[in-house]
Length: 405
Image (cartoon, rainbow, N blue to C red; front, side, top):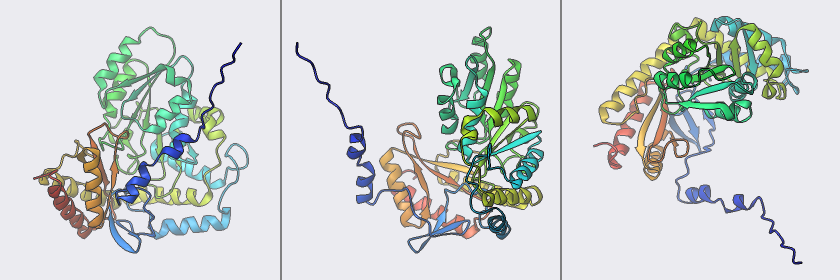
């Protein structure tokens, strides 16, 4: 009897065959991992050259605020550079509790929980809250962190996707699931990170409550941006009682790194004791906590940072539209500029780079095929000269590539 031998394939062969990045680098068309030597809010230094930065999520322009830098430095003296443990064990610092208290108060919620990363906060909100028989409804454009949380949880087998910002499609799916066992959880976003659309959180939440569903809103790009003081989408729409859980990050408006969840005390307590990505992750270091706390206090008391941001955003949006660019209906600080095919987007990026404008292209699969974009965003630290320089470059490169006439 002849025994058939199964050929073993080297699992690393796929990595050895991957040469897409090397090819792009060789052609001078690789737009990623540009090493920044110095950050100035609206501009950066790369290889000794100054570039206008139009891709940062530093919406309020606070990353270089001297008060935040000083708070972070002082926290190093008190707490050291890291916690060397999870929050569950030896990683909880007094300043964690202070930030959580002030953050909950700011968000209009009973309690808050601080995470080592915004990605972890989003993923944990799904992992901890979605049980085996629960039905989960995602806006199709929800962030990858929510989808990865679903893959790690019971939610994946019961996940429904409703059309982007479409409360009617959500209602159709909720109605179709009437009578089925389990709870209902609806996940949406305050501002969507690629399209730049402000989420129809008010409409989605109203429909969700009609069917007894809980609402979780990822406000990573809405914190500091929406609401009278930057509280987020739930306050912007005046639906504080309809959004049950707010998830966010410190890596954008809060000029730091890390993430948070804000909700009723019993919900936060449950996540704190059952959310595996939280329990088994190292705590956010003191210097990062101190930076986020100082940014929160500035956000609360100094509205001019947000006002400057919106002034700059509206200036760029109106002028880019007047030039003839397709901005995909963006109505937030994130302004995607449609390029079309992947090759066009890369050449668009290269032309802007040569004009000393730092942008970031978003290519498939991050966006649909044939709909590659240059993803731009603008903050309160941009000067008028920087914005006009960016507009000049967009106009000339856009015309050269026949993206606009």
